[in-house]
Picture 1 (cartoon, rainbow, N blue to C red):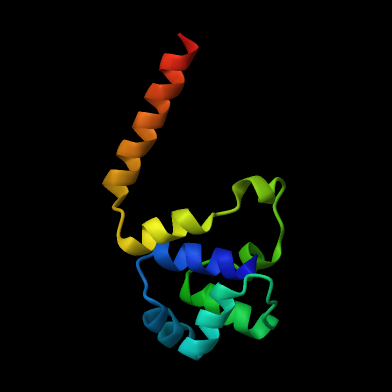
Picture 2: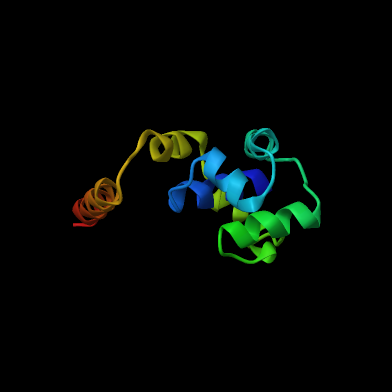
Length: 106
């Protein structure tokens, strides 16, 4: 799941693969490989470089969180972020979901 977390933070912070690879001082092809193969476990050295570039702790990538499966980012969501869904669009979507939940409960 390390690759999924890397991709999520990369997109959230607005980096392309090229930009993050350069900032982390790793190859673009290896970073792409990590994101596309989430079961891959890179070395702690690589994780540390990526974490520093994304201004987070290596523990973010290493530690498994409770209910991680329920928080797993689906490929459809990742595609939306890559295609350029804006924060404003996402907030509107969240408001819509809240409205639907409210309407169902009343």
